[in-house]
Amino acid sequence: MRNPKLLGLMLIAALAAAGCGGGGGGEQGGGGGGGEAARAAIVTDVGGLGDQSFNDSANAGLERAVSELGVETDVLESGSPTDYDSNLTQLAENGFSPVFAVGFLMTDSVTSIAPQFPDTNFAIIDSVVEADNVASLTFREGEGGYLAGVVAGLMTQEDTDFTTSDEKVVGFLGGQEGAPPVQRFQVGYEAGVEAVCPDCEVISQYVGATPDAFNDPARGREISLQQIDQGADLIFHGAGASGAGLFEAASDRNIFAIGVDSDQAKLAPDRPILTSAIKRVDNAVFQTIEQAQNGQFPGGQVVEFGLKENGLGLASFGRFDDQVPQEVKDQIEEARQGIIDGEITIPEAPQ
Image (cartoon, rainbow, N blue to C red; front, side, top):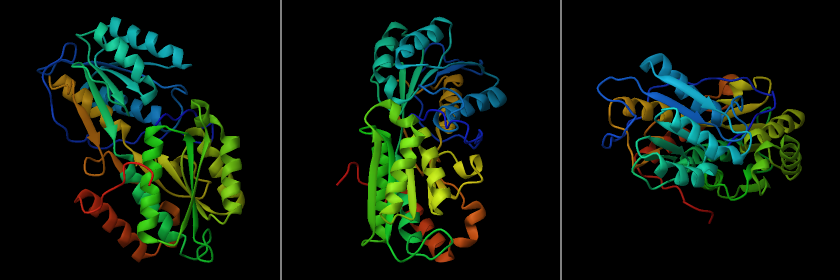
């Protein structure tokens, strides 16, 4: 999910963790092997570094590769979608491999550029490009959304400083309509709420129909306030920078928010962010660089990341931990294990 800048509301938190497991494919040119250091680079989506979420998480994986693997790196930021082709081409011409396209909006560009550089490894996040020198790194966002939904469905039935059991209403704030990763978060969230609170109401609304919907905190705040007026006392967002508007509304109206991609409570400690559905783009980037350096770049493969692969997770409750009953925590853990064990199936699309 593309997440532009959070407009100074949050400070970067580079989340380092062990790389996910994954299969290896055949050797591809430029990826290195036998211990030779790779030269890895990323092309950010619009919004670039400093978005405190998606692009920054990818860059955290790149920086971890510098520290642990000794790779040479570069980052080219995209000011607009028209920069995608030129940025990918420039990095390939300069000998970087693997080259990461951070976001599904670069699907067409990778599809066009990768065949022109058959000896360069490319990786795209949140999309699938069928080419022998492209690794498609996808996430089962619905799993993270489901856990967020379990939290919301249970906590809206609790009387806390931020929730009331009087009205069982929760909200979802999406960024761009039709964005597949956001839709998967939404579908999982709604299923999670339904599983623990069948009579709860979920209000879901998107900011807009273009990529600009990820960078409109004023509209995000407006929608969040509307949902609060309809009774929502907990709102989950998958809206990039627009989520900053949710955090403002949550502070103003004293309700809980749930963040996305990074542990946003650490990035905005003054906001009532109960938890976050974390998406470990950093792990995916680091793992892929490590595979390339070992001569096992997964070219031509779709590599999925979910709870089992440490590609998704739920942040701790932090300073709000004492407001979450132990039975709620137990149910969340049961749901997490149920997903990992295959006992819980997340819907693929809105019902």
